[in-house]
Length: 275
Image (tube, rainbow, N blue to C red; front, top):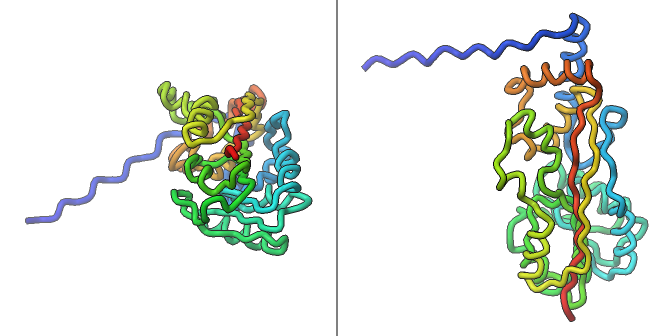
């Protein structure tokens, strides 16, 4: 039997027209720059001057630091590169952070070990690699998944879970620009009331729950590319080549109409384990 020839490669969709050759050159330069920069860690300083995100009114880092100051043993779940935890002025005598992504594990270790915190490589799946009642404070900023039963297990009686989380349909103006309208079950995922119910089902008392919707702006197409490379669950499998026509059209839209506006959703949840 003769071998079949592979199908010929499909041509890439044509790019939309640019306003000018200079606009095309700016597009290519911005995209190339954003593709080349490292997206390790959870530091978004590269976006300074290129994108803005309104901050929640509660000031998570400051509020977390206040709780760390009073704790004896604390756990930071999904610490990323350890940047948020490292910014706290004082860490408890026992401070542990977990992370699953190898580049972030290395960054967090380098940042947190000099401060006396231990970084544990963890798959972000149950069970947490700690004994029952090991911590009087567990914190987490923007966890991908919250394993409520495990949090309840590792908290000591009277201990607190304190977390800022991504809410429903966050930055979906950008998500739906690339992926099209999302179904209600996707738009409604990560509802704060679902978090309350899950925490209570795990035996915790929710003592605070605050949602906010916040303004986010992207000033150039490089900021969009960097954001989607870094926050990989927004447009799963995102690559510049796959979405080049949409990126080019969005580049022209930003140049002609101004920053691309989206809205971030966040909620703050605090739950305690009964004595």
